[in-house]
Image 1 (cartoon, rainbow, N blue to C red):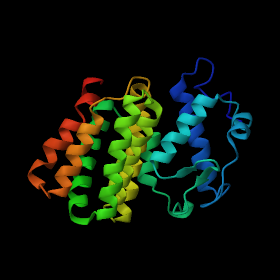
Image 2 (image 1 turned 135 degrees about the vertical axis):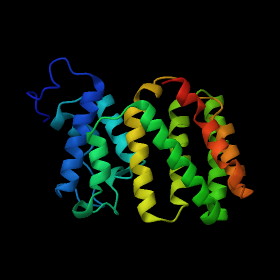
Image 3 (image 1 turned 90 degrees about the vertical axis):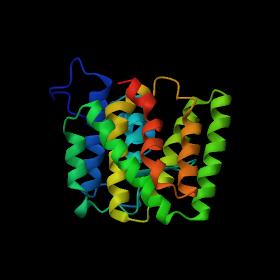
Image 4 (image 1 turned 135 degrees about the horizontal axis):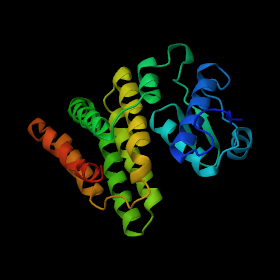
Length: 234
């Protein structure tokens, strides 16, 4: 159960609850309570244990998924990622999670990482990964057309995760996924309540074209354009 005597309790907002859930789960993972490759307790058990709402728990799991700490296996449950090693957990990323940062700073960091990701992808992406990205874009178009915003948001995140994995650099992948998790926490919780930008598939298509054509000159502008909507919502 989360400590009811912590300063945040009383008149606690949703973000504070999500932070507490993340802190508890990260602590359990780093201390070995939940080891790499093992399954977390089911949603009901975690809700009962922590005395939190389903929405707050799901938000925390969503962020940890974006960070590459846990993975959701449809129809099975949530697992600690097998590559997470508690003894060498990224303290830099953890300190960023625990600290304070402005939305503008996080957006600036996101652009730097996206720019680097696309440039690395140009050099290392495979045909299979490009096909997965193309399929993702098509699926996202359909989801948006059918009003399935939640699915579209999942596909949006998945697009970037595939792109990051295509960089084939384990250290970069860990840092980039960590930044995406922090980005979701600092900005995404507010934006996710709104309709996902209908132009997202267009921006993703431009990123993919930039990679396919190995057009380094367009990288910065294409990435900047893809973040316009986020800037407008700050």
